[in-house]
Image (tube, rainbow, N blue to C red; front, side, top):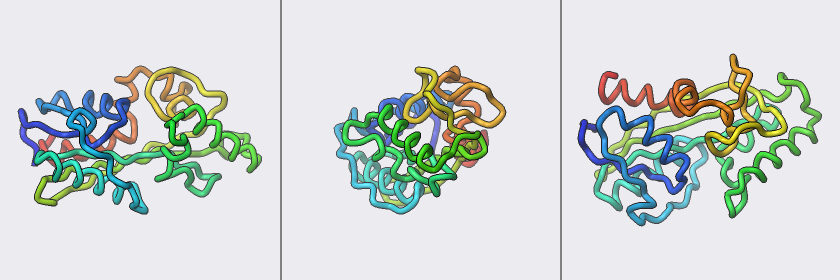
Length: 202
């Protein structure tokens, strides 16, 4: 589906996500353009899983642009909150996509549960990537990274919930981590690894 030198539309209006995907995919010689740059509308994400929402976005962008499209649906799942915010991770940030608010909302929900220790604050990020052609054919790849939530937020790197997520085996948050270091271990990196192995044998 992918060939070096081909043009790929990233089906996202989230500039942090577009930047991170661009960094991951650039070594494979692909030209990347975002849905926002092409003026494509954002489809309604009414799927019940990360994979379903990724498929909705990728198919909409592929059909509207006539290009192969790559979408990413990802989010934070907190064990003590029964997997919330999950597929609604962005909605917890409100209409203004204020992730300082989203992180505070998660923290307040954890406080209401009395979750104070790292074991009580277990969480994981999930990423579902969908690669779709204008004809509707598609492939999905998923990745996950486990850790625990800290408070208060630390670090200015990354985006979304990164400043409160501390990956297993590390003593800094994704928000404090150098982008290259995060790219090596993140949920998105794990899904990308599966996709690139399938597409390029990389």
